[in-house]
Amino acid sequence: MSNYDDEDDKLEARLEELKRRHKELDELIETKFFNQTITDEVRILKTKKLWLKDEIHFIEGKLKGIAVNGS
Image 1 (cartoon, one colour):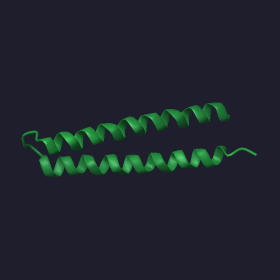
Image 2 (cartoon, helix red, strand yellow):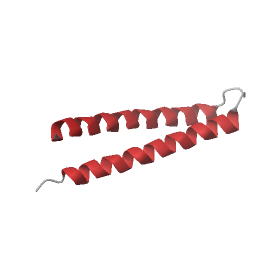
Image 3 (cartoon, helix red, strand yellow):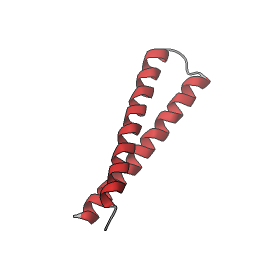
């Protein structure tokens, strides 16, 4: 018996969580720092946002690989 569905479900849940956090950071940066000079806080938030985007792309690629291999 394979745990394919379980692994796929975990990746899908992680992907949705990452997308939610990425959107929240984007909104926070836009609201809090709109038209302000770049501060260390903004740099940190943007770095976190980029890290989340990298994770999103990694998981999406892995899910596409699972979908291709699983079909």
